[in-house]
Length: 470
Image (cartoon, rainbow, N blue to C red; front, side, top):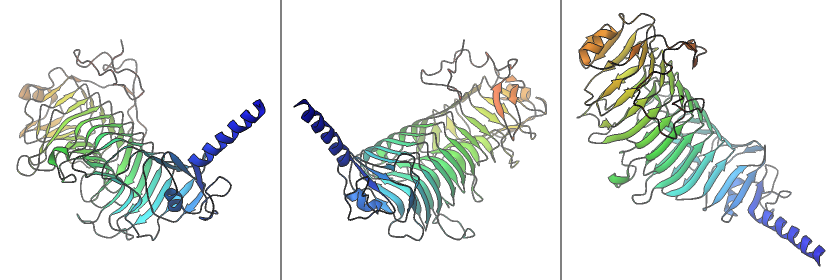
């Protein structure tokens, strides 16, 4: 009797496994039952057979198809260490390689997607409403708006690696995670690599490696009419963390490694952004609208084309919206503006109640700290460490129509940065080709900054250590 019970339990366990895990192989057959030993041939056929809480495992090989997620609560992933590739070459039956519409409980994990080449091409599209959607450990590349690399670019030529459109007027996309993916080698036209747009409430974009794109790397967007209800048409309550973004350069616009355009209540932390247009831009393109509550902390921005930070409405009030209540703290800004634009480390346009403190600003040989225009009411710009190899008496700061040629003149002329320090931070390696921004033991930055600053309980530096130490 005991022996029978054990066999029965083993049988039940195998049966549950067989019901919840199914398999696809390039040598399979869609007339099979989808088991490990008799897998299906095509991904879409396999997905169509799944029930809630089932997983479709892909074996290594190249799958030539585009797919739509048909139901809720399913997982599509690589099997163990398999390397499945979904190659969309020549396929135009739908725009994205993977489409997720009005679904919840979806996981896409460990896949390689490539060669979607058509106008408005997309690697992964998530739209409508839904919750608990995760895109993880995927490699996405060669998503191009055209097969001809010389084709002209305009507002109608677009492609996107991962795009999220929260376009339901009442129900958001929430509990969204885009984590540990690599996105590269995409001609995007006027679009971006990873974008979260519209009615999206609660998201995380972390651990991604985004590089060699022809426009913006990561974009958080609001106020574009994606959601018909203006009250919900704003990506919000998000986290952009520990991403590396580089070589996202556009020949027709200044492309931010990270761009917050119309978002609300977003933390951007522990990212590294270099060789992009801006290291990060916090702006608001749409007239009469506001980007609010953006926290940019503990990031590294170096060797970007124009500036480490662009902050504000670029043409407020008639040509753009405005930015309110943004903070830029504890960031390392090193030798930006390689295009010699004159902006230096900071390009500031219209913002209200902004805070820029406890940052490193290590200037390039141009010796430009900032270019400011349109005004920044109630700005707090202080307790920073600023350094230029040309010395504090050979700096350029253009501040709302007033030009200053020394750090002292800027302090006295504006009343800003009166508690800031001009000093070499003594980085371990201030080499633009191989930088190491850890501090040597003699650094004047140790124990400095605003003494009244209290870091958030969740705030850590780039090494995962507490921001306040001792």
